[in-house]
Length: 193
Image (cartoon, rainbow, N blue to C red; front, top):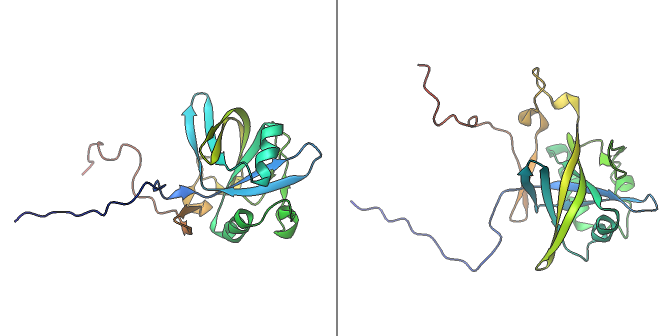
């Protein structure tokens, strides 16, 4: 018996899902902080540690990041899901998101832009280059520091994904993460049975 798997062909689209749902915080030269939500952020290099975030030029945070050259990527959790969505649909031109959402500005160590204290991990970034790619501009940034809430560390000092209860974004919806399915290299390790 021959089994044929059928797939449906769609027009080109962004289907690399799920994506991390992160809140990007920044601060303008006058000291006004803002938060935007981005699902288009990712790792670029491990040496030097570099990540990217893609932002539409019409977004309020775009000008701030372009001028200051820095931002913080804050991981999001189940508890931050409402704030994550709000920061993606409301503009910092109209509302102070830190104030409205009762989020706490967390001072960064290496840059002026604040992190979000309620986030388990805040990644301090300094822009190294940016490039227009269609309707988005990709900011490449060197990670200059990582601030981790110690309540999310396990007994060996490693970040515990299950404790953090992180969320991801897929096709306009947010999903909880956290069930460990294996450890890197588990498919080739010798069985101890």
